[in-house]
Image (cartoon, rainbow, N blue to C red; front, side, top):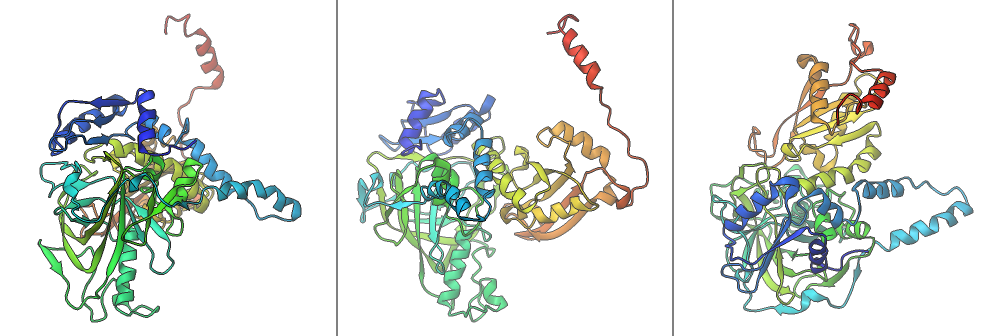
Length: 524
């Protein structure tokens, strides 16, 4: 149970026939992307790829497309189906308050099981096999340039660790990082991400803001009104913001972790739940952590590569463009600069990466896994939900199809607004709500029912609010409109007085008769 590290995971992929080792020389500049893109778009997502002959990096290996199929996603989480994980989540959420001594005794095994998920700190680990406090360089690693118009090379599958300055809780997020030179990177945490909030909290503290923050501080502005919003638009270049608070924020970056840890970094978890705890829950075994050498943070002990350093609170630099999962380049913008202070790694480290672009690609299968695991948590807040579908072509935030058990008029609109209130689901550009008998995983069924059920003027509503930073069509960066479509059957209590027709369905007796005679009729 639980993969010890990335190398064991690679061995499992190999034994399962899910890994292709490539010994021919390949270039990390564009060529690996083109190869991986073709493989990921082949039937079933192709295989995971382990490149073993990297131009300019003798002895280095690159792993890509490790999550790029439904089967590999199940293997990564060590289940036969993702619903098994969802069932485990439901099991823990169904716990009721004990009513007496006997109930408390019955809960002990569950509490003991939950206890084994918490991370534990160990004295050392494989990621400390090589420690480079001096003469370190990012050029040592085969970091990819993915697409022709990318601003440079990008680390695309990092586990970026930051700490809440108020609570001390850690966050692990998957934020791309642009390589500027041997020692600095761009930290692309979008304004709605938890690491960005940690950054703003440190700014507020450094600026001497009191707990009752004025509007300027809530927006990430200094005491003298100077904007320090990390997402400020820029015409390019590096910016030092005068009069903004001085200081640094510690950051650690783990690359090449075991699959549960890597996946946990992309899960939209509540801010109060550490991703290391989620990883322990997924792998049913605690994550072992080690202290960093130069910053007060902990990273997975079995990581292949660890980058340690800090960002200045008063330094922004242009990051991007970057070929993104929308199928378009995300535009350049200002982001904090990550300065390296130390690199530790395993001997002969394996560089784990991914590429994003026009779907389907590896991230599509990761997104569908998040969809299945997020469903029980959505139902906790919105119990009428039956199922959801985030179509791959909707690139996660552009379209959500929701089926509900409708009990009262206007409920579809209530569900839309509830979805827009849930964490990262607030970015959903279009929500289509259908009745419980519609299979949301069947796009044909959804299209037939939704388009037959709506009167566009009556059933479509628009709202304004935060949108994904990657939405290039919004009226302003990070702010725009969203659309909800009530495609449920309309009731008289919703002002619909016409009779609603029945769906065309054959009776069960005739269907069973034809089933029995099918071969006799000459059909396979």
